[in-house]
Length: 116
Length: 215
Image (cartoon, rainbow over all chains, first blue to last red; front, top):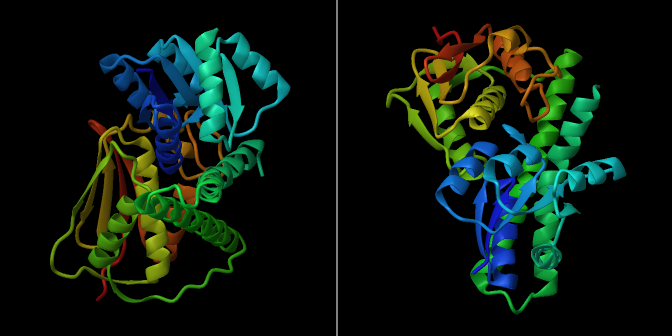
């Protein structure tokens, strides 16, 4: 089963999106609300996909990508300019999604990213 | 207003709006397919998000009134212990991060101070939010004789940033939020002839609020 780590500092949004994503896809979705929590969770568990917010209290999405070392990474952002998108793609994010994002849209992006 | 403040304000508005937007999208798409408990959860999360937006507008209004010296201030005899108990319970139910545990050490007997209850609620909310942001696992709130200590087990405040802690809208590393919470809390404490300081602990930080006891 595909295992997803969803990292965002808004716990209600994370809860909502993780439940919807699990229901739509059948993926197992675990959540973390900080860089530190993501680091600890990824050290203890195996994940196939990282979906991370870019703006966390103790770090940013690029640091989450680096410390978790999960092979397939997608970024969530509140607002994004063209240069941000380019920077994130160059940093290795397969996809950058602008919030609010629906579970269906996220599921499609994950599926596409896993097929690359 | 700094770009950082505007960006943080946009973030703090957008986060609860994302929750409401996602919840309403889900409710509109599958009104009959969702089980009752799932629908109830979506309504609860939406209500909580809207409450946070209302809270944000109240904080902004308070900050504006403080800056223009136009604050409503109506002190009465209030129990600091009861206010703190209520604040910790409300915060734990709505904003506490899921890996953080909050403990309240509050004496059973009243701790009476002469204070504006609404303003002290605002102070306590800021202290809890600040500790919640920095805590790794633990947040401990302890009420004494006219004092409230709010301790977290985070990294503490770097020496270089201590002088800026109570400056509104200043830039600090790894800071999220609007950047005026501690300034707001300290200003409101001083309005009550009280004090607010932040101390380094061996494993974290302490925010110490002190208010004059009722004579």
